[in-house]
Each structure stands twice: as C-alpha cells, then as structure tokens.
Image (cartoon, rainbow, N blue to C red; front, side):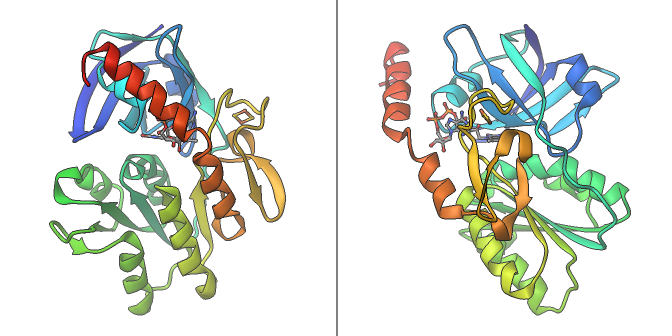
Length: 278
Ligand SMILES: Cc1cc2nc3c(=O)[nH]c(=O)nc-3n(C[C@H](O)[C@H](O)[C@H](O)COP(=O)(O)OP(=O)(O)OC[C@H]3O[C@@H](n4cnc5c(N)ncnc54)[C@H](O)[C@@H]3O)c2cc1C
Ligand code: FES
C-alpha cells in the first residue's frame, strides 16, 4: 500500500499526488512511468513519474481526469492509500549534450516533460520549453519549467494567455526565426505529437515523442501497448515509451487508443451512477 502524502489541484481536472514509494524514488530516471491500481477492483493505468524526492522517498504523479480511473483517483485525498504502485517502468529518456533542445508539453504533458527538461539542462543543453494549453485556467507549472529552461513559451488555443495557437505554431515560429534546433522532445495528446512530427520532418530536426498506448502489465508480457515504429512492432512499455517520432505509425496508434471507447464510457457512467452523480 502506498500512502498519499500531498495532493494539489494544479488546474481544473489536473491533480498532483506525492506518494510514498521509497524504492521507486531512488531508482526512477527521467522519462519513466509507473502503473498503479487504486483498489482490488481497479484496473491498472500508466502514469509518468513527474518528479521524485529520494530523500523523502516520494514520487510525484500528475493525472488528468479523463475517465473512470483518473476521476476516481481525483477523489483520493492525503492519507489515502493506493493499492499497487509499480515502477519505475520503461526506458529512461536519452539524455545527452545535443545543443538546443525544444521540450514540448501539451496539457498534462507539461508535467511529463519536467524531469526530462531538468536533465537536459543539467547535461548542458540550451532548453526552450513550449507549454501548450487549451485556455488560461488550465495553465500550470510555468514557473517550475522556467527553473529548468532557458526560455519558456506558453501557448493557449484561444489566446487567453501567452501566445495564441497550438504548440506547433510556437515551434514553427522558432524555426522561421532561424533558431538552430538540435532536438525536439514532445509529450502530449497523440494528435499533437503527430503534428509536431509532421512539422519537424521536412526540416530534418531529430524528434522524440513519448507514446501513450493502452497498457496492461507494463512489463512486456502482453503486447497491448504495441506500436509500429519504422515498420517494426515495438512494445512501448519496454522498448519505449520514447521513440523517433518520424518513424511512428501515428494513425495506427490513434485507432488503437479508441478501441475500448464504448466500454470506457459504460464503466464511467456506472461509476457516476453509483455515486449519484448522474
Ligand atoms: C507511458 C504512459 C504515461 C502516461 N502518463 C500520464 C500522465 O502522467 N498523466 C496522465 O494524466 N495520463 C497519462 N497517461 C494516460 C493515462 O494512462 C490515461 O489517461 C488513463 O489510463 C485513462 O484511464 P481512465 O480509466 O481514467 O479513462 P478511460 O475512460 O479508461 O480512458 C480514456 C482514454 O485514456 C486512454 N487509456 C485508457 N486506458 C488506458 C491504459 N490502460 N493505458 C493507457 N491509456 C489508456 C484511452 O485513450 C482512452 O480513450 C499515460 C499513458 C502512458 C501509456
Ligand atoms: S503493456 Fe503489456 S506488453 Fe506493454
């Protein structure tokens, strides 16, 4: 059992939890994730390790409420326990001195790029972080990313804060200004990562994306998380989750993510009915 020591609402529907998990806190590297199960009847879901505190023995996760399990997690408070918390899983991000690295986070992806941006900065890179949100009230961690970046650009789709538009617009502007970019690292909704990959490809800018397929065990045993990269089948939980974005079959990934849509809806509706929410 893993105790929640701290909870914070970062933005509507986006919750941060600091969880006591000493072994994971000691071993985790940027880019890795955990699989958790809330209780005996729960499903296993993957969430990125957004931060760690090895001295305190804690791991921070940031979860966006999108369906039954993440909404249920949102009802958990300090002092509550999570039944299973497995990790660190996946391959760590490839950190090196590349030169200028553009970190792109879309929505909850902003929390996921933080440990990677921090490591990239510590490795001596010039780090530009582009943080994309739908609207002003969803903006979070701008200050935290500023601490580990040389430049931070915030975009909102509706222009209510920062630059108006998508993360791709901010990236295109940097390219148009003649900025020499050695690596783009993108984490966010699949559609965002696909468009980032399409944008950088003609410029031949090396682009890495952290893929978010359906996962079950997270340890390479089932293939639920399989993706096609460079024409080859890979299991994102053990071969990734980060891959060369120009080699990923994005349309296949998006199709697979929609596979359980009807069942996800049924399960969420049932959960809400049991609580008198509908
Ligand atoms: C490596 C990895 C890291 C992730 N990190 C984060 C993170 O840090 N923060 C965050 O908010 N989300 C993260 N996600 C996505 C998160 O796992 C899903 O939002 C969550 O599983 C949804 O579960 P649900 O029951 O609330 O919603 P559902 O109603 O079950 O699903 C909503 C949508 O989430 C996706 N999804 C559902 N089940 C899974 C599953 N078992 N594995 C992956 N995706 C699923 C599907 O696209 C689905 O349409 C990550 C996913 C992966 C693969
Ligand atoms: S989740 Fe089962 S192999 Fe990756």
